[in-house]
Length: 194
Image (cartoon, rainbow, N blue to C red):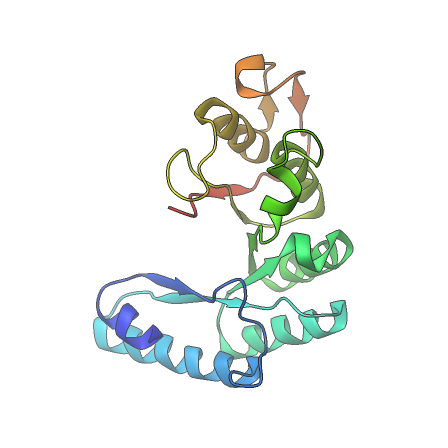
């Protein structure tokens, strides 16, 4: 359970990307249960604890409702599956989070269907750039080892693209031209899928 993990020493836990609002675990009940676990573990450990609540839903309005409820509960981080949710809904949710002091953790559920095809599809470098344009605070970036393993230099290249303000051309890393992001905020890459 969330409480046991946080009480046992973890700083953060998160909803799985597949957890949204199934009949056996409705989102509102889960948000309430998790908030109670966070606050109880904080009180007992005197440490800051947290949980990333999955706000992904079928409509922008429903996602905003979930983000508002997370904020009311005092849980400052939510998750959105930006590829399954879509770019318009992600941009809407990112704007809401910025305006309301919430962090938006981005999961890349479904990316493998899109970016793992050598002969067709869209490289994750492009999907990562699109996410930076759309908005978010953290993005699952994969790793150079584990189940979401990617080529080391290419993975580090798109990590630079989402994080840095100016990225120099480096063909080894899959960066084919200099990229300056100007005032578009960076996104913190999060190692995932290990």
